[in-house]
Each structure stands twice: as C-alpha cells, then as structure tokens.
Amino acid sequence: MCAGQGLFVQDNGEGHLVPKSVALVEQVSNELLAKAKISLVVFMGGSKDLETKEQRQVYQESKLKTLHAPFVALFAYYKAQKIEIVANPTNLLDKDKIFFEHMAPFLPKKWGENEAQNNARFSFALLNGYTYMAEVLSRARHVSLESNIKEDNPNSFMKTTLYILLCSLLALFFYGYFFGSKKSQ
Image (cartoon, rainbow, N blue to C red; front, side, top):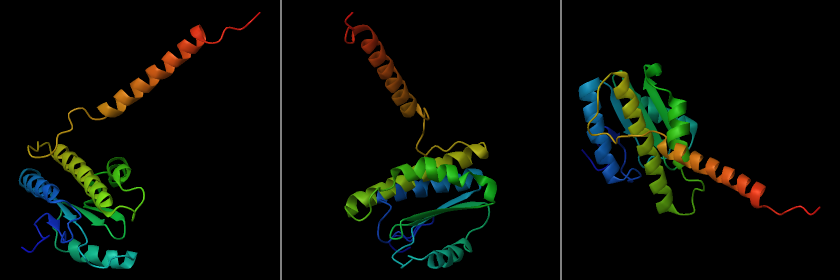
C-alpha cells in the first residue's frame, strides 16, 4: 500500500485525516466488517482536483464500484469543502442526521484563514461522524464494537448546559424580583 492508502481509509496522501484517526478508522472498520459484515470506508479525495460536482461524481462512482454491499462510504473533499455519505442499501442509516448533528457543527466556520486549524477541525468532524456511524451500524446488527470510541452518556454535555442555563435564568429572575430596585410610593 502506498502512503495515504489503507483498506478503509483511502486517498489520504495529503494527510487531511490525521494518522491517529486513520489508525482508529482502520481498527474499527476491521472489527465492524468482521462482526457485522458491513464495510465502512472513508475516501479522502486525495490530491486530485475535485472542485466540481461532476468531478466528484466520477470519483465517487469509480470508488463505489470497488465496494460490495452492504457498505457505507464517507467521501471527504477537503479542497472542495464537501462531505458526502453513500450507503448501500440506502436505509442503513440516517445520513442527514449524521451529517447535520455529528459533523457539520465541527467543520471550520471560515475556510482559508488558518490551514492547520481548518485541517484539525475537518479531521475531527470526520472522526466524530465516523464513530457515530460505526456505532449506529453495530447496534443495528446487535454487535458491540470494542475498539470504537464509546459515547457513555449521549447528550449529557448538552443536557448539563441547558440545566445550567435554566437555573441561571431562574436565579436572575428571582434576584431581580426580590432584590431589584424598590419602587418608591
């Protein structure tokens, strides 16, 4: 295999998916394939010029021909700032939910200002979406992945944040009500 070429992470020659993430993806995908018989592959687009939708479509079609169903392919185009999730069969997972809830919030807000930070955020967004997809696929097949990143308390950060905000608002309300400026009579 050449640099940037693995079984489950392909065309990562420019290193947009960091080496530790590549190692985790390879390990989790191997386990998912062995236990659930589903391929979960990440295609990074390589150094090819894939700016237009037509170029990306040709690239995707050539890569999808190498896969056997059932599979999920995650196509990440750093230069074009695009991510595409393809599943066969299509009902394996909710692609929109994964993208909008687990990937999009972590993507760079302003591209082009800080290349290293953009790359780190892009890599994190891919890894976050990937680990969630692996978990969803393994649960659907009733298997447990030992090597995947565990989400022990899903949404616990969000719940805690909302509770803190609610308590703060209530405290401000009661403080203002009881200790606010006294009205003169």
